Length: 304
Length: 305
Ligand SMILES: Nc1nc2c(ncn2[C@@H]2O[C@H](COP(=O)(O)OP(=O)(O)OP(=O)(O)O)[C@@H](O)[C@H]2O)c(=O)[nH]1
Ligand SMILES: Nc1nc2c(ncn2[C@@H]2O[C@H](COP(=O)(O)OP(=O)(O)OP(=O)(O)O)[C@@H](O)[C@H]2O)c(=O)[nH]1
Ligand SMILES: [Mg+2]
Ligand SMILES: [Mg+2]
Image (tube, rainbow over all chains, first blue to last red; front, top):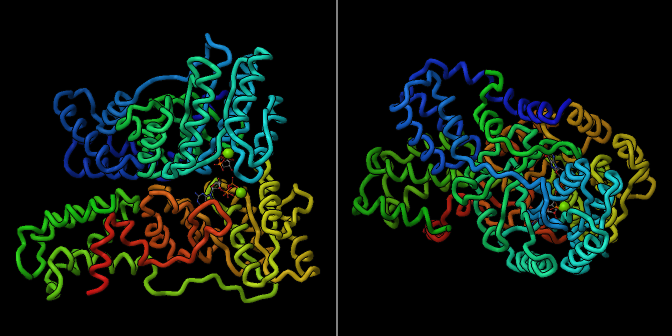
């Protein structure tokens, strides 16, 4: 099974549960108040939030009037969602060496698993990857990353539990430089964005990266649990303010959650979604595809 | 953040002077603001709709108490309904009636099961009990190591068995607990999706083996609208005894507390308020109403009246 097939399968699980055949439900319908209310329900239940949903529906109303080439309001809505998403991919072609990717997020969102998935993705492209175990706080966080390192045959740089996270990062970068490795992936401890001491630790890690590799970190990815509700906005704002985020990874989209909050974050804060996680295995990662994402979000069947 | 709704409501009710009756017309804007606020708190869309209908029904025609302004009276009604939805004054403590008693922790990936297991074990140890932790997550990398480390930190043994077969580990832990006179056995399971049939079946089988006194689902407080889907499925399959809502030390409004109780009828029993071993508390509905509604002070005022 190719990666894209797998991605579609992951998302189709979500699709089939609640919004079975939604396309036919809306096809041929005009955009009256009832339809608008149904669409609002879909958007809000996707976790897009009331405000963003209303903005999008306003756009839908005015576009629907002007453009009569759509006989399915849902498909017009889908296209509007797609147009509203930024397209900005993670880099595959590195000029700089080492290329440094910093991975952050709240507790349990999927950072460590995403780090492993990225390691897999890059090493299968022939890149040499170093994983930095900069979660020195949580019980067995280091062992977790080391086990991934074993499975993927990737170097993991780690210190003792409780040691200085920034020092681990420094060592990982030094290691990468001296061995000519391509990529450093930094797995950090989960932290709630409201805890200023923990956010300060991230700033410190970032400063070390900036100092050791000019222009780095090249990517700072916020890992967002796809089941997250409106709190996601608050998370993204705080992490962006503290260390500047270049992209979002939405995880756990293999469940029934729609991940609409990621759309809202992109819409409100201009942070692009770059990757999607749809399982616990190393291959369950996909470059973000706006069309697939919006189809899944609205329950539109991919075969049209 | 918490003063948001309060300000809006004060504005909405500004024109309603004195102590008149609440009517469909004069509560219209207030109803809309409350609805918005609940949705922003991630209370499920359909639950919000039902709740709002109920509030309207109760509010219309109701006389405003002498000591309250119309907006306060309206909020009093909303508050009372929310508290009732969260279980009111019921006492929802963890209850263990056998020796050894079993507590089984379940939930989606990353929700906080392993942390909660250690916190609970520590809680019972401090009460003079002799708990045993059982590591039945044989899937996630280093999940067993995580529980073992947490057990070491608090001086509580962790049963790991063959580290491969969850059912076998749980089965053997029963005999082990009896032999070593543990009075409470806390089983940590792997995170899983509610739509993963094979993995859900594993939980059903573990449940059959130990017939737990408490079977709790750990739910992340930051979860949005999908909470009802997973909670319903876990409850349908396992007949939960209740929930633990984790990560409430952040700034999520915690609307999930309303949704999961509404959809399953099962109570929230504990809340997680941090990563430290002592960050576990009993759940009191009235403490969370202000947070979910997005208003603090007005509620304590109404409380006093
Ligand atoms: N179903 C599913 N589970 C995932 C996905 N990504 C991660 N997980 C699971 O979610 C749980 C948490 O993942 P981790 O990678 O440990 O999360 P983390 O952000 O590193 O957690 P902390 O370091 O404790 O903050 C694990 O059980 C993972 O297997 C995904 O895309 N889908
Ligand atoms: N801030 C905060 N973090 C918490 C709380 N409970 C758990 N965590 C953190 O959330 C992350 C996930 O917790 P775990 O206990 O590993 O979650 P889990 O459900 O066992 O995860 P899996 O086994 O991977 O499914 C860890 O980083 C914990 O430290 C809490 O109440 N507050
Ligand atoms: Mg981690
Ligand atoms: Mg666990």
